[in-house]
Image 1 (cartoon, rainbow, N blue to C red):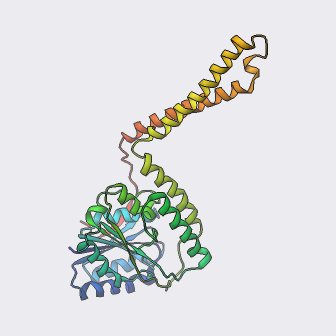
Image 2: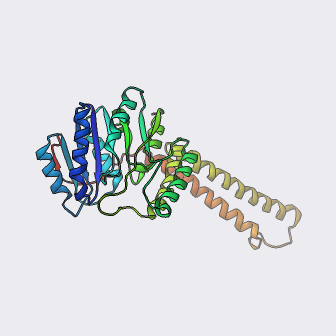
Image 3: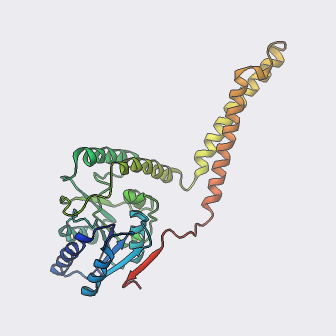
Length: 316
């Protein structure tokens, strides 16, 4: 199979048929073998009924319905697990991503040997203050922190070689940082392509300004994980040893001063340096223990289910 198109969605009943027909037309005109995976992330409208109807009309349509809303990252994870294509294309269901971009994205993966290609919505049709400016600030911070030179980390239209999606873990809200996850996994040939962005045709956006706050918090997380995710002791242990050493040095200073230079002066417990030394030694010990516990946790396997599937269509 040439292409798997993975489409996470939430309450997009109005756009699904039009999106499906557009994708199918592009695939047929380019003679691609394909599948379309709709991941219904707990919609409470008629999105799943539309997906069922499309699957009856087109055997290339597959669907997964979550029991409740788990988030875009979990939806992408489920889609990646089921995708069978040599190239996996992700796109949003709101018709703001243009399926006409798929052939060139596919060729960049297959012929130019990219591991992944991210879309860049250079010209956007979103609100300037609600999305455009926060998005520019967010992308600048992501580039500086991660070292991945992309202009639009959060563009839903991306293409991946199948080896990428089968070897990365998209957890929490980390769908914004899949290029960083791919880089950390060793997939270094990451490109970008300017893509057409279209104004939303139906409904309202599911994301607000708060997503950028969450995005920056996730950016700190991904930075930490990329630097110390496999070796937390290198950070917490180093901080712990440094703080314990500072506290211990203060304690030695207080002891020497009391014994040899000021034996009849104030008690050690009456001096502020004593409490500084005590606090830094305790905090240092806690940092060291945190690093040790982090190393132990890394060696335990998380077997908890990340999402519950309610229904499936054409999933083996």
